[in-house]
Image (cartoon, rainbow, N blue to C red; front, side, top):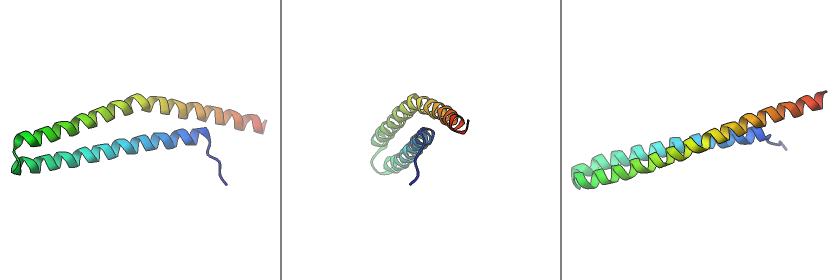
Length: 92
């Protein structure tokens, strides 16, 4: 059985956060593509409303990620320091 270090856990959380951001961007791209198709069939106003909602969601998600990412990166760095210190104390 392997045990994840705090550093590893923080890095996994950071990777998950970045993956969520990529997924959100993909979703927004799909909605914008759909909005372009709607503009041809349903009218410009409905398409722009859908596009604007998608952009607002993307921007809100990006803002939240920007607030959280430094905290997670800091936790990963601190965990790395503590892990190295613990290993050093064990060796010495």
